[in-house]
Image 1 (cartoon, rainbow, N blue to C red):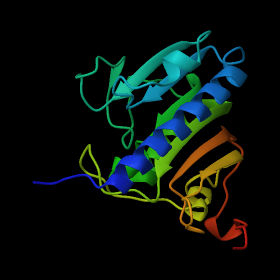
Image 2 (spheres, helix red, strand yellow; image 1 turned 60 degrees about the vertical axis):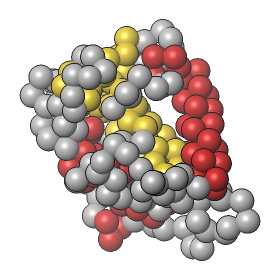
Image 3 (spheres, rainbow, N blue to C red; image 1 turned 180 degrees about the vertical axis):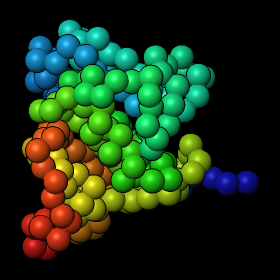
Length: 192
């Protein structure tokens, strides 16, 4: 029988609190400036609906299990969603479960208006978890590569207690800039 270790239970709770605080703070800041929000893979967890209270919140998920507005795969072109039709996209705890996170970011960029906001999150120091597959972990540097054509406003890092340079979790706030076409070789990484 697989038993979840105490450390993993603690890290999961820390990560969930980190996500919820980020969503509340960012939702409060943006809710009056964005009218239409797309939440990707919410699975009925605390999220965009609770934090963007003055916005229309729609959803995209792989299956109809949670009654999303749209059923589709964020790593594919979702033709039922028009280009540049959302002012904000919330994609929390999803990218690590995709087969192609770069394709997911391209689709997010297609759906998001120029100047629109994207909120992203993913664990780093956390066990393999569901839904399957759990394929990726992104460092601060990996986020910069994934979001090379976005203006990153905030990288919110939840540090692991007593473990330097191995954060538990990241939350990201970035703006879509359709004029950017950066090469990964042009990225400036923070010296560690």
